[in-house]
Image 1 (cartoon, helix red, strand yellow):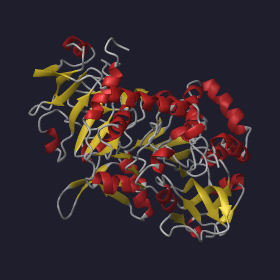
Image 2 (cartoon, rainbow over the protein chains, first blue to last red; image 1 turned 90 degrees about the horizontal axis):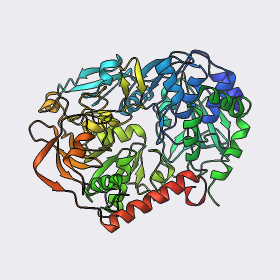
Image 3 (spheres, rainbow over the protein chains, first blue to last red; image 1 turned 120 degrees about the vertical axis):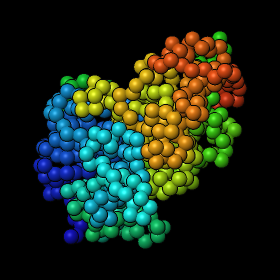
Image 4 (spheres, rainbow over the protein chains, first blue to last red; image 1 turned 90 degrees about the vertical axis):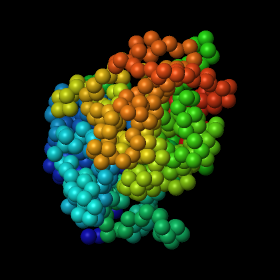
Length: 286
Length: 264
């Protein structure tokens, strides 16, 4: 497999299918919003949406009726409160009922890592006394064959496709991720194929520190250059998190009609090219 | 503002900050714990290690983060690690001295619910869920909890065990093979509570200035136990209050005015 540089609409169309298990990962930082919006415009259905912190983009995809299942560990708007479209789906089955598979962060992080490591499951010390172990049949236990300690086991996460946003690619298609690197590397390596949006492409990575998080080009199916593509999340070194937008989302998502109007104006009638302008006021002063 | 020159919430945050020491390695929950931890860092515990679950270790933000992954946490951290490493090496590996959690629902044994109100499969209110808390509660050497008191929040029976405290009390943790201390301190806007050594039920050990036993009981959903020798929490000092208020003013300005000044 060789990485291809593609326009985002083409990268999404070539790599995402109805019914896929898909991860749009980003742990607060580097959330692939532009890729998610492109998936919304292309109207995929029956997706299994995997993500530790579903956040605004899954609230939007769930609200648009694209998800049949969500796998997550924190279904909130970080620092703000609840995700109101996700709540509407879970509590009221609107716009459709969705299946829920809930884990802890430790469970999801271990499961991604196991996926990247090619293992069938992850084993760790977790869920002790936790109610999730009672309601999620995918949380089981194994005994350590050496000490007898009872440990938690969860199936590894192996998405059909993972989307991430990253700072930059070089011309060959190697990708650099820095700052809060979250689960980006594991989510890419756990997936059958990966699509990366980047802020920019540079000639080469020759002057980088040797221990940075670089995803070699042959681990990625497609790269799309989308400056600002993480907004209202942020890209360390490029622009700051739009905290005001996260606060505003709480009001937009609270109302079904207002949500639809917002989605129409800000997603369906827009394109990946619109992201750059959204982060202009958030860019670091030179 | 009360006649005392500080609010109950300010007293809560400051009392919580005093419980933290310079040598602590603290896994910080967002909200009230985050404010308390940073007040501690800015007053009596300048070298405290604050860790947020986004992987930022030894962070020193100038404003309180809105999320656990705000950029400033990374920019000011000693190091930033991947999320699997955060949970495997640092939390599960036993490096955290204090896990500091907030709660939507809390019972008298320090069990926390942030998952659902009502039945899990047919929830009345779907809350965000546990995030890192289930393992913070069991892998940190001890757990501090802070929350404002209310009958809705402090209940006889929680709807879901998001994070295990002392379970049914007594030696329930040991019976599950959990070898960490669990909740050892609860700080509310009215009082400081510690678990009874035997039953593990949270017991009021100190009332904040001007607070009565009756006020504590009226805003708590279980029958409150009070220690025989009840202390009065020392009022916030001028330095503590100024530090907290300055921090909150910087935070408010930064979050409302995204992109202006230092926020970028």
